[in-house]
Amino acid sequence: MIAGAGAAIAAVGGCALFGPLGTAVADELTVAPDKPWKHAIGDPRGSDIASTVGKQTEARFGFMFKDPPGYGPPDELLQQLAAQMGEPTGAALENPDILSGEVFLGQFIDHDMTFDRTPMPEQELDPKGLVNFDSPFFDLASVYGRGPDLDPQFYEADGMHMRIVRTAEGVEDLPRQDDGTALIGDPRNDENLILTQLHLLFLKFHNRCLDTRLAKTLAEAQRLTRWHFQWVIVNDFLKAVVGAELVSQVLQGSPPKPKIDFYKPVDADRPMMPIEYAVAAFRFGHSMVRGRYTLNAAGAAPLFDPTSPDLRGNRPLPAAFEIEWWRFFPVPGAPTSPRNQARLIDKKLAIPLLNLPPTVVKDPMVSLAQRNLIRGKRLGLPAGQDVAKMMKMKPLSNSELGLPDPGMPGWAGKAPLWFYILREAEVRQGGRRLGPLGAKLVAEVIVGILSCD
Image (tube, rainbow, N blue to C red; front, side):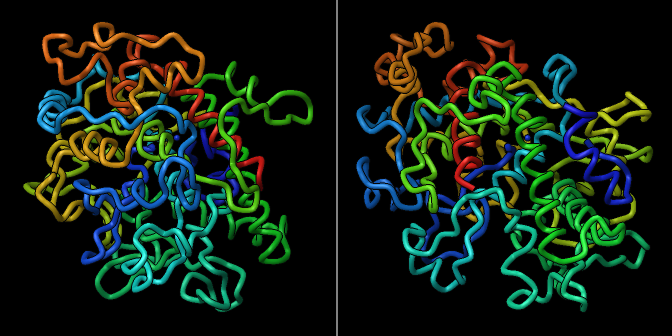
């Protein structure tokens, strides 16, 4: 692993150097037909995917493990558990091994995996995305859209360079519409101003490949940018969150070849997205999100706070929020303090995530923890212990997980898969990286999908 995720992207991009969430992942699984499609908006009370896709049929989504039954503890227990998962940011909760840049890179990776080109009216008619779905290859479709012919608004007049603009304050920014929303391939990448600037770095990297003549055509610049993105996913992101030893196990030999035990893409041209991954395993990053971030020497800003200037996106980038990337990723020769460490992977979420603002969610369920737990139940996820058995691992007991069982018999001696993965990381790895089950799920799906490309 070289000096932090994307350090080379930033270096070639000619901007401040910068070094995986994913903080918010796959909330687009369920979308109410009467609501606009937007990240974190949906109907967590119903499953229009599990009932149609089922355990035996793969389309956009499917199950890695079809034998275990769906785990359905009472909603009241899930609500009680979610209410206990909030914790303010503090030094004792910080991960000494992972900086916060990895969290937002994970969100960026997720958006690239779940990019959907379906026009908005068709999305509303077909919220399951079973017919129109762009396969989850790591092809930066969130950056390039459909190309300069069909999405010229993302490109300069030459049809090769990506559009970058300057704000009234002189700050480089994404091109925007009059209402402030970004003109980019995936609008979710403008949800917060940290992710906004990460997306911008990929545009700069692409353009720098052309400006330095490393690439002479659009296709060459896209290929170089995609290859580097994929390299960063394997050599930086995965090694940080699952460990280098597991990466070497799922990618063996020279040149490396994937060794996958459980994830089966089904169709290499249209790999299936496992619900166990999208709704549970890759949501580990939610626990890594801080409530506040120090962006530059001017100070810190909250991620969500309606009472003060915060980092919500969908607006021109303020000069005061321009990021010094060494605070998010390790960069050679840059200061090492103060930097934004990620929070530990554990059962606690930063308080703002338990009270999401209306710009993020449009329904009364404002707790991200509650949304994750309820959605997992509605979509028929198996219990964490059942998945562990399918993966030939000794499961953690509810006592080890800290669930009040058998005092509350509704748990039936099991735990929701998402909660299990968070607590497994905490119990097995001290929260510094994913535990055996979570790490294996994440590594196999990412490497498996990458190997199909």
